[in-house]
Amino acid sequence: MKYALIADIHANLEAFEVVLEDAKKNNCTHHVCLGDVVGYNPNPRECMKIVRDMEMPCIMGNHDEYCAVDTDLSGFNPHAGHAIMWTRDQLSDEERDWLKRLKYLRMIANFTIVHSTLDAPKRWGYVMSKLDAAASFTYQNTGVCFFGHTHVPLAFMRDQNTVIGGKYDSLEVEKGKKYFINVGSVGQPRDGDPRAAYVIYDLKAGTIELRRLEYDFEKTQAKILEAGLPERLANRLALGK
Ligand code: ZN
Image (cartoon, rainbow, N blue to C red; front, side, top):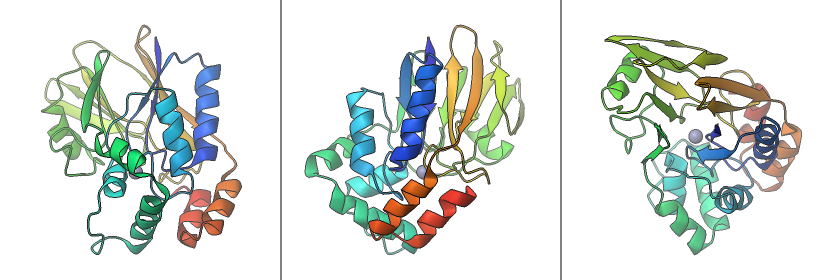
């Protein structure tokens, strides 16, 4: 069984399609979505439809939550707030209800998925350091857990009480150790590399591989501007931040 771990699609259809194509070429038999299907980019309905049609197990991201319910956005970054208001307008009641019902945490096969952290999955904290990862490891009951939210692919590993972590391309899962893996973002990478990111987990081989893929971000940029979304959201796709 080969799993494609997909996070932070953020309504970027061009990036999402390239990722699905690559997963198919690599014989992925299962797909899992780690949240933030919507927000920032111009194709929330199309991306959500693919996730639903493919029956991917999916969990709640912060943007999914903000777009599902009418919370006050006055404390928000104005660009993010604008995109959330815009997305709310695009979605039907039924689509917003689907988002609303997403769980914050799920077990898939023998691993866990969460959008932000295991210690407080509903508080949307960011795991960027070994210290942040250590807090999640305390609550991790499976050998492997995949997460998203930061849009920065990083791998953390706990052996006994020592946590190490950093950038990765691929790794082999060893028994007795715990892994907390950020799979990067499909639709809005923020590690300085504009290519779409996702992970392939080969359960049988015990290998985890980060994939990076070029896609036509200029097409996405044009659609962002056409939709009247903030120009900054278009610019950042070229920079990967
Ligand atoms: Zn996100």
